Length: 338
Image (cartoon, rainbow, N blue to C red):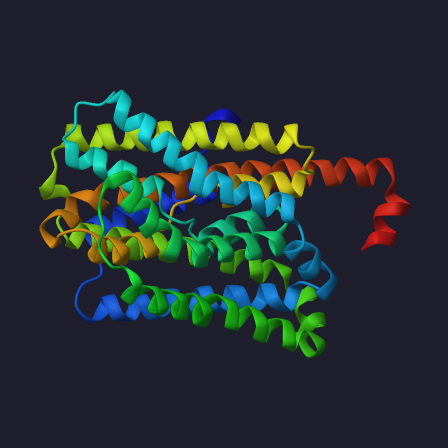
């Protein structure tokens, strides 16, 4: 019966999507949930900063092979798959939906969910922070260039660049740095309350899902397209995501990355940012086309969170089993490492 047991985090995600569908945040509640989500993400990065030693941060930042592959996955592999997908034309959907698929493929990686899932799965969090943040920062400049290159759109996105960079710095890097500076005083408390970091990871993911899906529901996601089109977008999103995950997994093992780095590559190299994509679409495309163009991105965003959350839970459980086996085989060594 264990095969049919629903993963707890998956169940929470389904409940969150249903809640956003029937009770989306509206009016003043939108600002409240935006503030709450920002606060949860800031707390998450503060605690990760306090948790990680300087040696681990330096090692994560200097892991150039991992960062190079994640950048290639985000800004080379994804766009190529997007172009092939549009050329192949396998789904009976409109040209605007295909434009939306191509657009999502050239966006930078999402930051908070990639790092939260990496942490949940037991990956290299220091490398994930560096890689995902770099992807988001570079994407502010690279993605508009790719839009102009592969989609023949030539609007000026510079006006949004500084604002996006400022938001990334303020929401992610500043709390991380403050947490690391505070490590001297709170490192002991963080070590004793590591479970709180895991809860913060899950809370931030659920808040991002609720906020993103609430916005989609309020903007009329269920009225703009029929059920069949929606299903085709889900199928297309799953297809693109599984191809990227498979290639990243193959590359991680082919290039000899360890388990923690493999997890980081999977979760940082397979995400696309809704937070960056929607504001950028408002700058790059005519206002009348923005809604339908970002629809595949909104759905892909939910699909990637759900699939990768299940994958993270599997990695977490396998890691716990591996640690238990190592402790049974070598209890004295494991105890000395604690």
